[in-house]
Length: 617
Image (tube, rainbow, N blue to C red; front, side, top):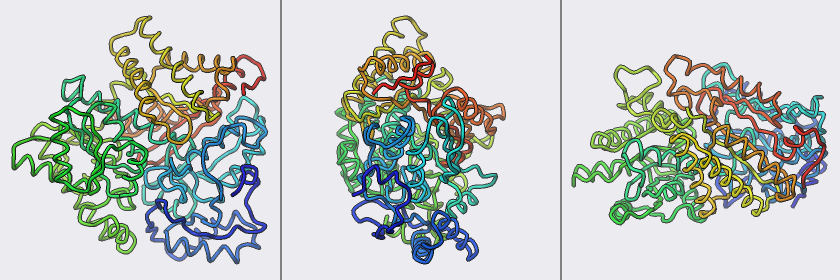
């Protein structure tokens, strides 16, 4: 096994590590179908070999060419590190500035097998959401970070480290851009296969905190869907039907239980189901639709909170629910959505109902044209069943995964007559649910305790709860009070349900007043030694004005500017000179331009503002 010192020592070349290929016993990314011509294949190979001295090309070139043929991408499996990949305590990283160590902590957390969807392919979530394009980039970035000083900035170009550049101590230590492509999706995918770009969000800025982040967002979405659609505060006995348990979507099972409803989640990949069950996020697994319906009825009758994973295709589940209504007149589903990776429907993001999981993976690479046809047929069937239930009173929303957009392209009946081209028969979750929260200035506020000590997380949980409770007592509007109360409840439930996967992290939603108060309180606790190491503060794509996406975050903007990307760029540029430790600008994840700024972690932010050069450890 390698040590952190060895991981930060640059590419291991003398000698070359043994090529062990793909590891057994862990999930792997589906075989891609890049459809590159001979010139493009040579270009992809050349782009991969550029990281290595020419003396190694004779060995590596045929190996990388085989990976491209066999898997559709050059991952460089030979260079997958032999180390337990996880977020180590910050003081264990060899570095010249603690800010660099914080970035290393976050990178390794994003590649932790407990966190990552396909760890050996560097995919954190979403089917193709890579931290880096290949393992050479990982080794180089870790080396650059270990050598970085507080007068330098590391510049990342779609996964490729351009190097350390002179800057100053108040400049970002890291600037990231991903997928800045002036063209359509198929060109982005082509450039990904050629190792020229990456196109993803929180993975590409190294700040994914495991599915906890979307557990929180899904809890708020389901709670507020109940308020808006069902007119209830208590979701006991209400049924939420959805799909996906792989990456981000794995959060849905736990979110349903925390929200107090019955959650039925379909998933075709048995490994994903077992992973969530072993983590305690799924209460039960079944491959029987009869058992699924029976359990649903019992939980609905007894008003029990339940998370039930159905090992099968969600289309079968929706069609069975429609059949139950046709036969008995009983509407079993109250709320519905979908969290398949439908932004990437033809490369493993959506599996057609006509095929088994294994058959679909084979056809995806052997006959991509036929696979596309089956996916679109499956989408039409899924929408038809959803429409049948919706006509009887079930409420369905798009979860920002491009499900309705792909269904429209497939010819499904999702047209909203008289609407603009960004609107469908069903709303996005932003349009009807989360948009009202965003308009209050509330958005995600995340933190990671880099000590790795659960006691530090418990301290920050107490701080955040106390700050929000104090804000409520000081007097706020009814709508703001409701959001503060939901997030106080969330922190209490998050601790009870043990939602930490990977790093010691937490998320809540707050407005500016709450964020500033929480950050200052955390800073004071670091300075006083109550928290033992720096804390990374960050946010994600749900943050107010952080994302320009006409089918998701800006879908409730109707003045025509929903298709403009100015807000994301202004956020990225503005935070780069307002004290952020690292900033990232992304185009991808199935949506247009997206910004993410990583706030300077607390100890150094507070000390930088106060003008002191002190490090709380």
